[in-house]
Amino acid sequence: MRRRVIVGQRDRRWAGYRGVPLRSAAMAAGFALLLSGCTSGDGPGTAGPVTTTVTVPTEPPAAAAAVLGPTGPSTAKACSGVEIPVGADPQQVIGEHPAGTTYCFAKGLHRIGKPIEPREGDRFGGGPGVVLTGSKQLTGWAREGDRWVVRGVLPAAYPLKGQCEDNRANPCQRGEQLFVDGRHLTRVMRPSDLQPGTFYGDYAANAVYVADDPSGRAVEMSRTTAAFVSSAERVTVTGLTIEHFASRPQGGALEAGRGWRITGNEVRWNHAVGVMLIEADGAQVSRNTIADNGQLGLGQYKSADARVTANLVTRNNTDGFWIADWESGGIKSTRSSGEVSGNDIIGNRGVGLWSDIAEYDRRISANRIRDNAADGIRYEISYAGVIEKNVVEGNGFGTGRGSGGSLWDGGGINVNTSAGVQVRGNLVKDNRNGISIQSRTRGEGPRGRYVLSDVIVEGNLIVLKDDGSSTGVVENKASPTTSGAITFRRNSYRLPGSTRFAYRGKSLTWPQWQEAGFDQDSVSS
Image (tube, rainbow, N blue to C red; front, side, top):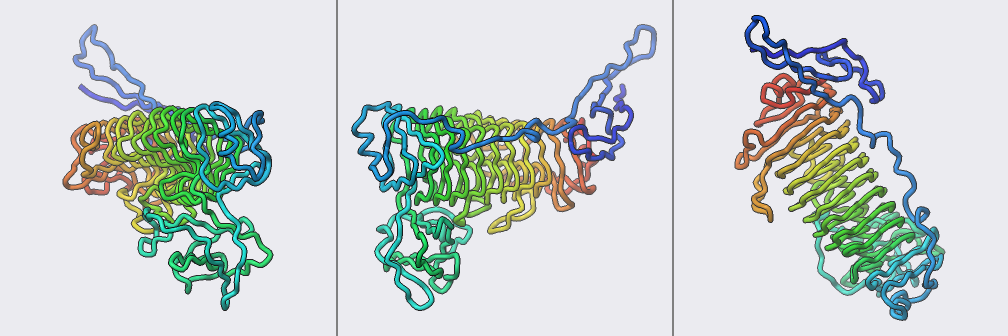
């Protein structure tokens, strides 16, 4: 009995991948790795060696070359229906018409004093230049020494929640933001910290202070908590710019429900979540620009079979929520299912795309997830997920509380104590770490105890950035991985050094990683 590895002429190209040279002598033309079967005897009639072709990836997924294209109000269809004029109370207009009416916001700035409550089947449209704002203008400023103050503009006390990067002063818990000529100011928590570009809210004295002279400038403060709330099913919102809402942590400026369609909007500069799906089974979110929101671009809670496709989700977490580990960044989904595909999730100050807590039948496909401060993709204490054909690049380099460079801190793709997860056909390139598989003690879930099991990492291109990055498995002493729980196979690696893998608390070289039972039909260079 014998086993042979048959390789062809050495190929110096990684086809389709920017001409990156390969150095491994085990690289065959086309990256085909031929494994011979077993044969016995040498007499007449004995079959010759049987070969099996095992294909490893030769080029990045199609998402690497795809272009998202336009998003936001310019992509929305023209609105035809009942006009909501600038200055009108939208709720009053809604009350004058039956459910299922189409409403068209007139071009201009609509100040929304209380959240709009649609009725079943209502449709709300706009177009470029239609802006819904949750802010109020601040006037009557008085100078006090080297700062300016306005009084009587803050809301009554409300419950505070949320974990902030600064977990002592907790500035992210307050919903009110300040904008001067449209520029977002940073909240400080002590008057002595005031400087240009910042503001201080004294809630006990009901006073707002700034260091910049507000004379002759447009100063606005976000006050209304949401533009829309999910009061009815099958509502459509399209072609609107939604900005400056004082959404509370985990709350959205646009809160969608069952069967909603959120298409072609720009949702920006709101305090907490831009778009929030709440018990929104069958909702669809597509072709939106979701940018610069204070906590998170898009959230999803208890929403089955939702589809989030072809959105630009970028630069979220502007108000200092905890970067490493509290619902900040691009997209966060909990207890939900459905598809997240074809999105650009770029430059968010947190996790790019995070499925957490009892997710099931989740498909994360063909997204471009780049330059987010924490993990590119995190799949945590959940079940039955497919993470496929994504481009995951340059993630995990944000500094902050609780972050670091180990596999415990994640990297490009992080599978944390989840079962039935397939990670396949992705390009995982130049992240803090490559693929991190974590086994922790996490308790019970609705489909059984949270454990790391049946995880398959297959057919990925994994490029490690430097000698500080690695791929592998980490585990708590109380939650060791079981035999066969994790499979790495048919992957292609480009490694910067010799020791780039981790398992059972040890750093391993490529040969040692294969000896441990992983990636035996994979290749490295």
